[in-house]
Image 1 (tube, protein in one colour):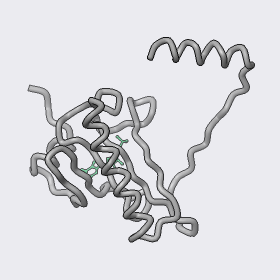
Image 2 (cartoon, rainbow, N blue to C red):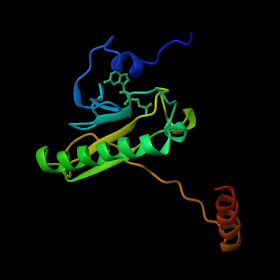
Image 3 (cartoon, rainbow, N blue to C red):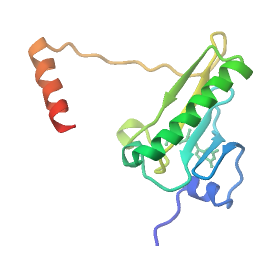
Length: 139
Ligand code: 5GP
């Protein structure tokens, strides 16, 4: 049998965590490493490896909770903004192979946090058009 990932172990109650929300399908816990004050992870209880593997109906439930958490962070923690983020694969920085969404409150005057630096490359309009077609056709 495959070894359980850390979030499955938390969901099964084998490892302690700070649960901020839980229902039959979804759980949200504070991230052990607080990028900002209130950084929370929301995930399905059933194991799916990443965002791309999660069925649509369950995705809706996870994102509903992420939205509620974001609203609560603005209201109760005094956040000025929120990042919603899900890493897929090592290349994108995923370190735990159990689908989860980061809900990260942002504060205008706080230390820490992070910055997403887009390293944009110039492309010509024809290339963009072909790229759009390629993605569109595979959906
Ligand atoms: P990823 O890098 O996969 O997008 O995010 C994984 C997150 O899980 C990281 O932010 C990391 O701090 C968090 N994490 C890893 N191990 C634990 C743990 O045992 N408990 C909690 N609450 N968070 C964890």
